[in-house]
Length: 281
Image (cartoon, rainbow, N blue to C red):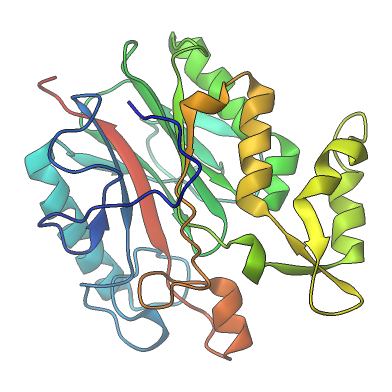
């Protein structure tokens, strides 16, 4: 599905001008389509300009509904039929798509059903897309620092394995999220993160903090930390791609909650990251 890279992975939009794909025209794994939306090409205005897909950020409901309709219109020719998103709570629950009634609280969605687009909403947290192309099982996880610390990535892999996936085949893409140069935190944040995981692995996680521009501030490498947690699940580094697309820095492409706070423009929109199995593969 993907090859190892240490660079900023180039994403192609093709003729889908507000949907970015990690590859174009001839994906390495036929029948598996991962994608990431940008903030452009929708109907929203103000802080949500223009392709906001989050329905929990005080945007006009009719604009969000229209943007989701536009999204599915573009995915439908590729095989995307229905959208499965959850009520994200920065926790560690991974669930199977196919619920009925109220949208459940969770931070990852897993499916083996073709046409079901499993997806998460982000505006700085890391979206992580998973696929076992042989078992035909895909998943999308929302990994902010709290969820990553709590084990959302491990639980997503476990949920996939319970459906029949093999850890040795699972591929993962870390999508657009806030990069280390823009994620300034204080020492209290560092101490909280280092001491909330089993066995208190300070010696291992410390490397994701670096000195910032202020004496009492640090920079945190969220995508690097997520990558390390994926390795902890048992994935090999060759099974993981980090797109290295910073939501804060790339203002013309992505919503960023932190940037919006800094500019007094909250609430702001959310981009959507999803993956699905083509029905005819």
